[in-house]
Image (cartoon, rainbow, N blue to C red; front, side):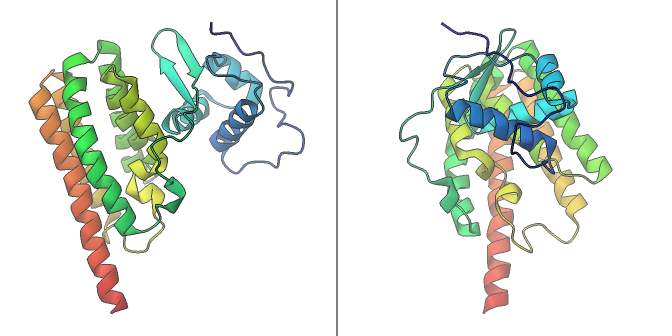
Length: 256
């Protein structure tokens, strides 16, 4: 039976004792909740406090809370059940057998993209068949966040990860969500690699193309067109693979 977790002892604007001030507020919330999970203060099945309660507890904005929850979802630590709340997940003992810390090169991420093409094209098909109106609205919000990030010149990695996770959730099959969660930041190549030349010389053009690809996926899911959703997801991930392949060739040429 799920139970509501009690608030931490720290006050609304007080970080846990001994913790350094975080440059990233969302990451601070993520680390504290993960610490509480590791210490069994939060157990599998426990329900996290509401967004408002977390805002008050950590003294952060709603945007920061949503970013933190999104990171926790992407890592497979929690799962949000629409209209019910966010719950701590049981961490599977061996997972998928993928050591994400070893995924560091362009070649590694290319291999993960091949896996994702197989998995996420079918997830998009299922999402278009099964999505709820609420899930479609959340996908639209993630897409809008990517557009705002592009307009302001800021990173859209968090919204990008959230978009793919929402597609997985819309399948109604928790294993898609768990698999994406275990892959973590390998979902978005530019979040995983710190490699010069990963993006073209005009990153704005690159991100605009990526956003259009996400828009095609969203529109197909919105109109409940499974085949179009599958094709749009395949196009997006195949394009990502091709962009990375070209990057690898440039890097190898420069080293040769």
